Length: 123
Image (tube, rainbow, N blue to C red; front, side):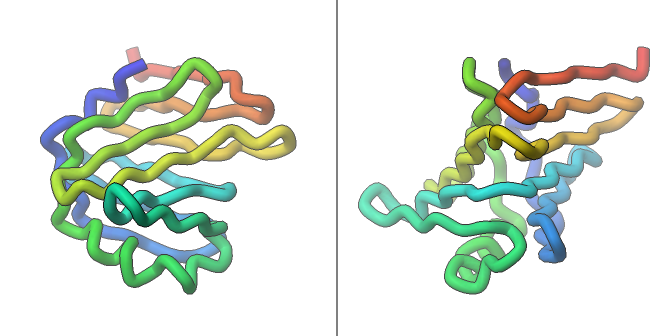
């Protein structure tokens, strides 16, 4: 499933109990489970949003980066590629909602426990 975020710039990266990425298209992506950031073709860094210390310097670089692809895979995994070449991947969790997207006009996409995807629209 294409999330239609292509061309949106990252306007803010926030750290709390989750990793939150805000975009220029008024979307909020909230990541709450183990994730992988591909920094280069050879370098991948795993991290948990509650303790992103090892990867925070890379995540901060996403600010002002532009999304070139944002998709949900068949298993519920979230994949976001950026112009810089970085790629963020979030796999589903068996017990928790792994990630969620909130967009304009009530649009919501959430990865439920186990990888099922729930989609709501404001229409």
